[in-house]
Picture (spheres, rainbow, N blue to C red):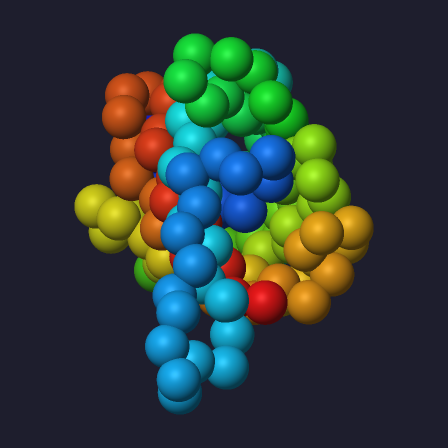
Length: 155
């Protein structure tokens, strides 16, 4: 049963580089430049922590690490920590960071289980070239330990 939920957690995990797949929205009334980045995330490590009483409970954690790829080349990594904040139905509060060549992007989301087929993770901040970033990361499963990410970033 936990295997099904891993995909949802991976989705939170579940948040760039030189001009990746970026596009600027230009126009007279546009205030923010829009950048679109498409990556593939491949899970490299994961661990469930059963904290407190034995069995799934509030405060238990799921930790996931991923490598990030673009065009088959590794360009960064991502880590996320999710904490169970509600049981039956399960909800997890997840916080993650994407480390990319031009800086870092942070994201945070409340995930409901069972997971939706696609999840949008709000961008909550960043560093380097992404210090003013906001927007969201659209994540879609692409296998048991892989997913496709589309960053929709406004600066």
